Image (cartoon, rainbow, N blue to C red; front, top):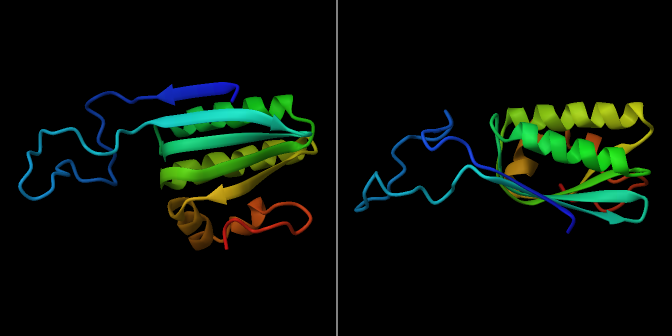
Amino acid sequence: MHAREAIMPDSGHHPPHRPMNDAAPGTSADSTPPYPSTLLTDSYSEGPRKVVVVRGEVDYETAPALTAAVREALRTSADGVDLDLDAVRFWDCSALNALLRLRREALAHGKTVTVRSASRFVRRVLTLTGTSPLFRLPGGGTDAMA
């Protein structure tokens, strides 16, 4: 793995999609939630393409880090970027918008952005919005979002 980036939002950050009190019955609401809003990215070359592995949550605070990682991978690849989103625990419309913008940028340079594998969170958003066909592997390869 060549590149790694971690994003940790302010400690007072509570995304609007999650309740502020996530405590399980019998536990304190002051305890640390089981999911810090963190995004980790790694990238490596695989032939003429770059693979970007994303772990954590992609929301309005971490989508810029996703954009930066994929944009850098696009810049240094010959054919494009394959995304491994299997370890993504949260994916919202900010993440989808970032991915759609990156796809447009890649196509403008004769490259592609594909989703090699996706967590159920990513698959759900891509399926509900009808955008999953935009990120399939070229040439009819395995569909990671089926």
